[in-house]
Length: 277
Image 1 (cartoon, rainbow, N blue to C red):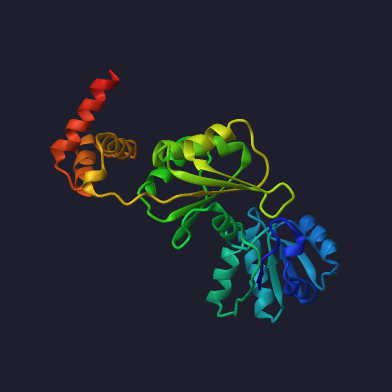
Image 2: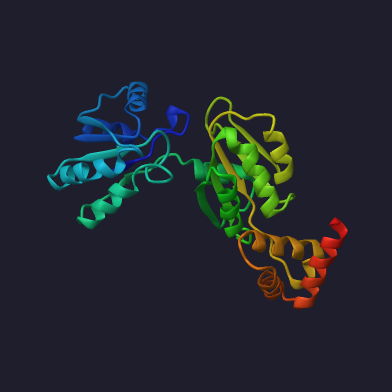
């Protein structure tokens, strides 16, 4: 069984979480020390054996937990905060249990993804969760370019010490004026939601930000051919070139997606080069 745990305020723990912690034969925890603090706060004594289950030992420990499940043990999986397997350990165990035709269920709980979406003030009817971006700048830019034209609202997790670089990269790829919300310390005492254009948020984050961070970014706007000015055509060509396409191919692709003649895109790129020189 997967069990969601509070993302900040322990009072958000569902009653079933307390019941399952007491009833489980085995509790697999991302951090056993944090589990101990949680059970103390909830006033519950774990009824079974507690084992660690984190990124470093997930692959090795999964067969052991599956064996316990096959033998009829009640196994409960919890992470430090939120829902297991969502950017946290759990996917391997669920996949292995499903392969053995073992029933998997969940105790639903708080989610940083959904909480941030709800507070962002951005469209939430369609969204996609992108998890953590790569740490290396080049890989981060490449990942962002993959979704530069994504129409759905985007949700990311990020470490506070990388937030300014990430927001700056988003401003470069998505556009400086794309709306976003940085959600910090959700449900905790110092909860903060900072909303604005990506360029503004990058400048704000450069001063230093602390805490658990979730970033929500507005999806790409729907544009008709007449709406794409020369600057936007050049930006799209540049994004494709930086992703590895030859300029000729990038110009042709942008012309098709924008619904304009290739010559128009070519002239915009040439004019941009001349103005920059």
